[in-house]
Structures are given as structure tokens and as C-alpha cells.
Image (cartoon, rainbow over all chains, first blue to last red; front, side):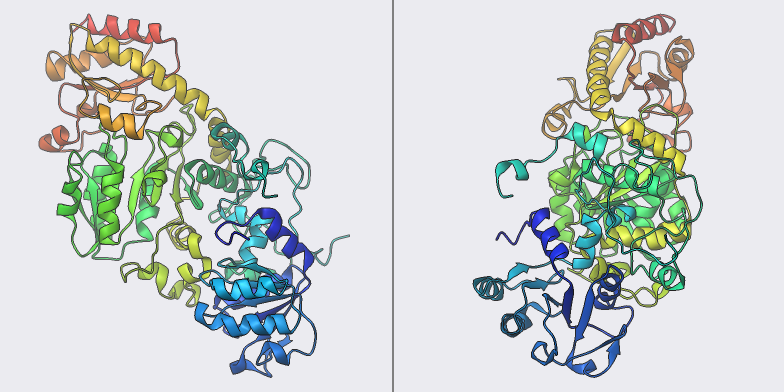
Length: 168
Length: 431
């Protein structure tokens, strides 16, 4: 996998294929990027379980927080990391151990060694990207803010949003 | 999906027509609809809160974002090879917004001396009221930008193809100087358009346009736009707290950290556009979008006509000189070949023998060309800058800006080239 330039199809397949995300480094502070991403991904229909030792036992956005990935009581499809790059190797080991299918490292986070380890164990890896931004980009919403999505379509575009209450 | 077919990129003409646009999700309308509405409904209170906090993408109010305007933003961003863009009411608003995100009271910036006269007034006079100081530098030697820099400077601003003088600035050299200083280069790319020059390809960081000119191209709608390359590291020094420190007006949100390589675009919209208010009307965005669909075709003809007219004037007995970088006689010919290989635009100046009075006779003597203060129209335009667009400048500023008393500025349109030359010939014969 070329981690400098992902194909749209690779990212789209990941985002369409997962249902549950463990968010490592999830913050309870509403103006932190992880809180933004968690709230957005929940609104798009994903289950997001926060992982943060400082918040263990507390709820963030209605979900109980766990100290580590190995404490999670259920399987997750993807591990999304809001942590510094040098903190990634043990998280990648945990992601492999709990059977996650995808290891996703946030904007500014990259660790090629940990990525190689996860890929060797059969996980798909995305680095230096944000799933919120990629979801918005691929399903059209990011363009609403004037961002160059690079997405072309000659069909009506599915915005990926789950049905809103009050609609038929 | 790793084969060559998946990797190939769409060409400029395809991007001009399709970028940012998709069939309307509700109706299937293929042309971009004009969403002439001030506001957009919220699904519920929580959705509204998420939108106001910038936690989700969506529309609130057309002063901030609008679906028609957003298509224009994504399209110009794609054509420039940028990451994101903010459209606004005019080119002057774009310059204000581009700097507003970077500057604090007491900050300074360096600008090329060869700029549209209105920009020299905006930078040198009106921006003083924000506590901003502009140092002007002669772009003929890029080192002049370095010499003008101070520790408080937050950007270098230039027009790659300057209005009105036919001056081309050495983008690569200036970008290198800015990089060493840890500040961005802002390029006004209005006269070149991304079809003739893409400043991001030469290491520049922000592009602004008066989209009123060639992007719209038909002289019927005002618009401006700010485009960010997405490659500038705002956290490399402590010069840009607006992007790297918590923003009080967004409850402590840090834009560069939260939005990464389009943090500048988000901040420019969420603070600059929101609080200064120069929003673009959806109708004007539609007009500019329609113009952009034919940008490549129009620019090809604009530069072909300009080259013919410039060569004709250079040989004319009533003409003292012609300043067009497409002419071998121009000191900017080599730079034009490098940065504008498809042609150095279609706005240039010439000097009429007989000075100020002769210049006025030419602009009053034309019968087909239009005497007005605009450029980048399908129509050929003519003006005497010293008595109009650059009138606010002092005499030495006039000469420095390439708008001396004998200077006539042309914006060559898309009429039959022979008709443009015939009209200029008959007007010159009256001097």
C-alpha cells in the first residue's frame, strides 16, 4: 500500500465496510478534533467507542469510555488513533490482538513500522488522514465548504447521511 | 484500481466544466442550480449546534456557505491545484480576506510595487486602519522582497502578471525567499488565470482572484476568491496564532489542528467571511461558473489576439513603446516563457507619442473598443490609467506602477483581431 496517496476506492471500501470504531485518544472536551470526529461519525451511523485511560468509565457522547483497546467488551471493525506517532506501535499491537480489520491514524499521525506490522497481520491501514474529512470528501459534504474533493460523478450523489427523523 | 487508468487525471478543460458540480441530488438538474436562499433548515437543535460549532459539514446561512457558491469554490480550487477556496464579493474582498486570516494589528507584509492601482491604495492606505503596514518592493529583482522583509511581516503579495504593465514576476525566486522567512506567498493570479499559470506549481501558497475578470470573462458579474495550496506548514513558527492557537470566537477551536491542510480555508470562511461579511451572491457565482466552463477556449483566443495587436502596435508610427511580455523586445519575455508558456495574458500597455494629451485622444477616439475601468471581458477595453484607475496615486507612484502620463492600457477581447487593430489605428491617426 502506498501510504502517500490512497485511491479513493480504498478509502471508500473501508468506510462502507465498517460499523464499529474504537477511537483511541477520544476527548471529552467538545472543542477537540477527536470530539468533532466522534460526533460526526456517530451522525453518519457508526458506533464509536471511546478509548482513553484518563476518561475510563466516563461517558463521551453517550458511549462508555475504556482505558485500553484490550478492555473493550466487544469486537470493533476499526481502530482510529488520535495519538502522537511514537505512541502508535503498542496500539497497533492491540489492534491486531483484538481482531480489528482496519488501523486508521489521524491527520499528522504516521508510523510506517507499526503500519507494516498491522498489514502483515491482515489489517488495512490508513495514515495521516481523518475519517470524518474522508467521509465528507467522498460523499460530497466536504465540497459544501469549498474544499477540493477531487470527486467526479455524473449521477445524483448520495450524501451518506442516515435518514433524518420527520422524513417519510 | 492501481492501473494507469485509475491514476490518470482529468485535463484542465474537463476540470473547468465538471469540478465541484454534480447532478442535483433532489431533481437531477445537470447545470448547477442557483440556490437563491439566505438560509437552510436544521434537522433539529443538535444538528444546528453541530453546524455552528463546525463539527459537521452543512449549510446555515449564505453569508458563510451556499451550494452554488460552493461549486465555484471547489472548481477554482481544482483548476489552481489547490486544497480549498473561499469565494467572496470581489477581488478586493479576496485580498482583504486572504490577509485578514494572517495578520494581527501591528503586523506587516511586503507587496510588489507593480500592482493594480486599487490594490496599492487598499494596501497602502485603507489597511492602515487595521494597524497593518505594507512595504512595497520593486519586483524586477526578487531580492528586493527579501530586503523589504521585517520580523513582523506575515506574507509576500504579488501579481504574477502585473496590471497594467506587462510585468512578469519570478515566482520561484520569490517563493524561495518567502520559504526562508517562514511566510506564505500570496499571488494575485487574475490576469494569468490558472490556464496560463498555476502559482502553486512554483511553490507559492495562496492565490487570489478577481473572478470578475477572466474567470467570469464576460464583464457581467463581480466576484473574488481565495485559494489555499494546502502545503504551507502554519505551525513551523509562531507567526500565525490565528491558525495555531485556540480561537476565542469559536470557544477555543484550533483551526490548523482540527482541519489540517484546509485549516486556512476554514478560518478564512469562519472568521473573515463571517465577520467582515463580503459574501458572494449565488447568482453571481452561477455567472462565474458558466464563464469558467469556456475559460481554456477564451484564454487561447485572448492571448492570440493580444499577441497580434501588440505586434501591430509595436510597428505603429504613433506608438512610442509597447509593454507586452509576449514581445521579444520585452525585458520580461524570458520570464513569460517560463511561467506563462501559453501566452502572457491579454492586458498590456503602450505609450502614445505625445504624452498625456495624446493618450486621452486615443481613449476618446476609439469606436469599437470600450472606454471603461475593467479588464478580462469578451469585449476589448481601453483606458488611460493616469486619469482613471490609478488617479489616486502620486506622480512617482504612477510611474512606479507602470501607469505614467503617456500610458494607455488595453484588455484585448475576443472580437476579430483585425477589427481591434483597425479601431486602434483610426484612433491613433487622430493624435
